[in-house]
Image (cartoon, rainbow, N blue to C red; front, side, top):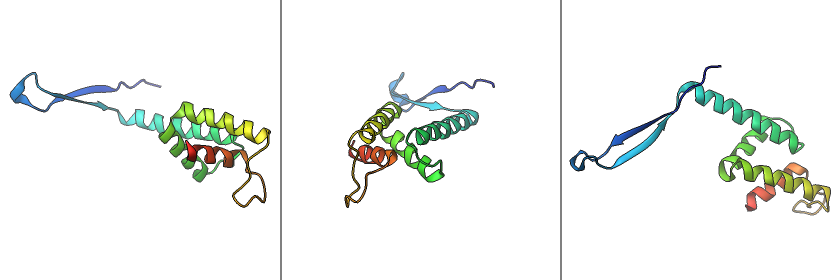
Length: 113
C-alpha cells in the first residue's frame, strides 16, 4: 500500500502586513480518508466485541461518537471501567429490574464523562 503524505498548506490572509498572518490547514488525500474510515470502522468493531455487543452499524456509530467526543484513549479506559463494574456489583437499569450489559454500562459512563 502506497503511503500518502498530508500536506500542510499556508494561506496568507493579510498581504498588507507581509509576511502577514498565516492560516494553516491540513490537506488530506482521498486515499488517506478512506484508510482512516476503514481504521475507524475496524476499531469500532474491536470495541464492540470488547463490550460484548452485536456488531451492527448502529452500535459502531454510537461507539464512534463516543470516541469522537472523548478520544480513543478515554474510550478504552471506559471499556475497562465498564468491564470492572460488570464483573463486580454491576449497574442496574433505570427501573431496577435487571443489571446492565457491559455495553450499557459503557454508554452510561460515557454519557457522564
